Amino acid sequence: MSYQNTHIYDVLFEQMQPDVPFYRAICDTLKPRSILEIGVGSGRLVPHLCHNSRMTFFYGIDIEPRMIQKAKEKTFLGGCESCEMSFIEADMRHFRISKQFDLVILGSSVLKHLENEQERLQTLQCAKEHLSETGYIAIDHSAYLYYQKENNDWQSYQATLADWWPSRLHDHLAQFEWKKEIVNHNDRLHIRHLQSENTITINTYLYPIEELKMNLKAVKLQYFLVANEYSPSLLKVNGQRFMALLTPNMTFNPRIDRLQAALLNYF
Ligand SMILES: C[S@@+](CC[C@H](N)C(=O)[O-])C[C@H]1O[C@@H](n2cnc3c(N)ncnc32)[C@H](O)[C@@H]1O
Image (tube, rainbow, N blue to C red; front, side, top):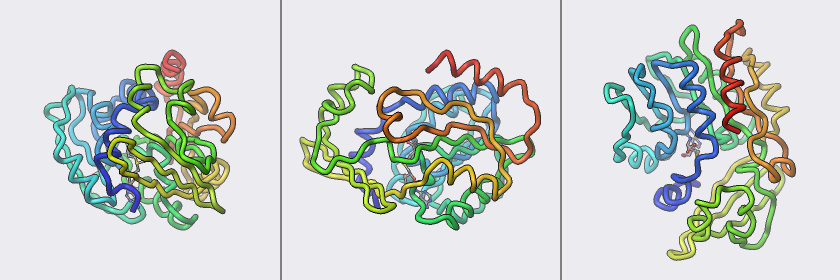
């Protein structure tokens, strides 16, 4: 499994926050009372999802027990002291929580961990079944994991991504090297921590945005596209990003217009 080394994962990803404004804007605009994050990892996004004081409960599920353990160990500070938090080991393809949620999160291209269409459809269906009557699914998806190009030799993060990540992260990124393999429909990202020489491999599958859109149609989820690009250069190489709110009932919601306007100020 890709994510067993939760320490390296945390060291690298905790500070990576380019998607945070997307979730902040969604939560500020929709003001959900309940959120489910599917593939929550060690909880990188949790403080940004739960800062809204109206929140009553947050659930995070993940298939990797060490991620769940790590998330449980963290103290999430934020505006929702009264928010009940639960982190549960579960498989996104078939989970059942006896609650419904105002917002379900499918972040960081999490569906790319699924190997085939049947599993993706099952997951989308399962996410849909956990929505409250007026609930939305927020999805952030790109066909390539972290939209990185193929590179067969180890490369420094700093050299390749320096124009993309904020300069405050450059020293941080200099601790790592990465290698990307795309073989058939596999998309594998290897990340090496230079000091410890520990490596993690994130195994995913290519999942083009067009296929995702067909799958949404099949499970009767419509979408409001909120953003399709928020970072320069690399996205243009590997295809755009699909950042949207999914809903089974597409009704006019003035908040979505406000959300799109709010995001323009962020990106
Ligand atoms: C890229 S990480 C994203 C973590 C977090 N959402 C974030 O944005 O920081 C993807 C997570 O999905 C989890 N995952 C992969 N396959 C899964 C499955 N079938 N069911 C539940 N979680 C899964 C992995 O263990 C990993 O923690």
